[in-house]
Image (cartoon, rainbow, N blue to C red; front, top):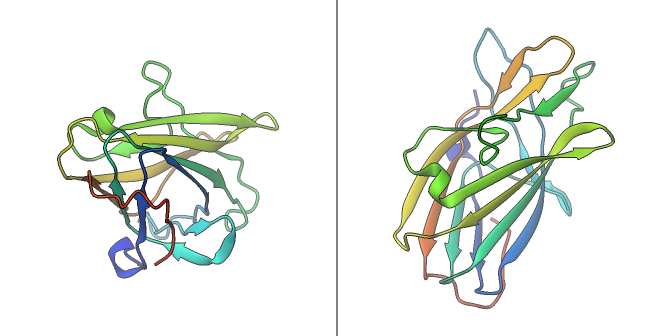
Length: 170
């Protein structure tokens, strides 16, 4: 199995004015009951894909990740990001680290009648470096089967951005 740590990192500096990145997530079928790495691509450059993420945020900056599902590797499945009815702050994710909700807000958005877009807002409220582990999570609307990704990790470094607005890349 491919591990997120073995792949290029999505690294960017987020200026105080904020930054929005458009990404594409491609779910994979489970193999032998094991979760698989789901490729995360730069929407503007599909050749560029990532495992883990490392964000350097200027004080007060907000990073917005707009993640769209690409279902080309799960043909015949009607996958959508999981939506949590009692707490809409972490749709599409399973938090594996404490205080995840303190920094992340994830909302599934409807596109053509299906919840195939996830908008994640990241803001460092505590202004201390943090490391978050999580899983992507979708559900097949036809069968009710859950699809869970491998092992992505996001690192947040506060007050570290250059303010230049540069972002993306390896």
